[in-house]
Amino acid sequence: MQLIGWRKLLEIIKRADAILEVVDARDPLSTRSQRLESMVKREGKQLLVVINKADLVPLWVSRGWAHYFRSQGYKTVFVSTTHHYGTRKLRRAIREAVPLRPAVLAVVGYPKVGKSSLINVLKGKHSAQTSPYPGTPGYTKKAQLYKIGEDLYLIDTPGIIPVEGGELEGVIRGRPIESIDEPVNIALKLIERIMKHVPTAFNKAYGITSKEPMQILEELARRRGWFYKKSGEPLIEEAARAIIRDFHNGKIPYYVPPPQNYP
Ligand SMILES: Nc1nc2c(ncn2[C@@H]2O[C@H](COP(=O)(O)OP(=O)(O)OP(=O)(O)O)[C@@H](O)[C@H]2O)c(=O)[nH]1
Ligand SMILES: [Mg+2]
Image 1 (cartoon, rainbow, N blue to C red):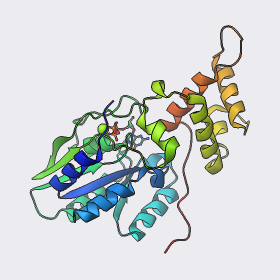
Image 2 (image 1 turned 90 degrees about the horizontal axis):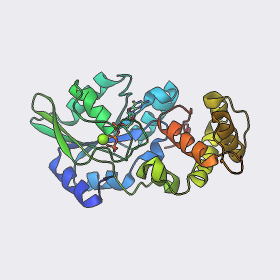
Image 3 (image 1 turned 45 degrees about the vertical axis):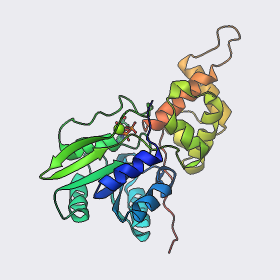
Image 4 (image 1 turned 90 degrees about the vertical axis):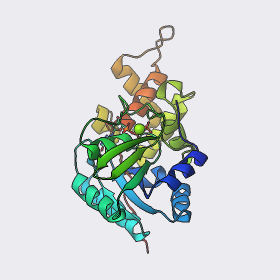
């Protein structure tokens, strides 16, 4: 697995005329990098925030977050690269961000936010490779240049590390699901976080009505027929990995509502 470090990232920022920071609409604050944002500012480059995966949240959530980022002075658009939603708005925002040509834009962000998918949409053809499923971070191995229009180029980059959005975000984004050491602990925290914002999430995803994280894991294992051979106990590690995977691929409904009051 390969992710990008800060030194390399700075090199890319210096090389680019403007930066597209891709964040996940379900939780933009945990998937934005303020360190990256101040780096871009220091270099005197334009930053365009792209809130991706808007198909996974209600419209008011995407709108609210876009408003929030704009209030912080960032040009912001929300899109869904898989549903081809918002592409025209994005193209317009890019044209405004880099009026002079030739221009190079760098697409940056944490692992799995959809950087490569965004490039594919802009390119119109399947050109930047994307992960086969959302749980494999570091799919893009190195920075690559793509032509997306007349004298307009995009640099696709691997996901940034470390992930700033807390330990949980760091583990679920920074490692392949199979190599997470304590999947149960991580899944329990993830379930708690999801339930806090969407109490019906596990009912909607699996028809499980329990509200207690450990019971949710046990119930899922039972329903899938995952048991320890010796003891016959539910194999909660397997259920934990399934939940992390379904969180990534959007099967479990989840979003953090945008703040109501801010300057
Ligand atoms: N639902 C939904 N899924 C998306 C969207 N965009 C990307 N994905 C999925 O998210 C996963 C990650 O997409 P990538 O484009 O590979 O993400 P990346 O940021 O390039 O990932 P790395 O190169 O590993 O850092 C893929 O499985 C995509 O199908 C979107 O708008 N909606
Ligand atoms: Mg990629």
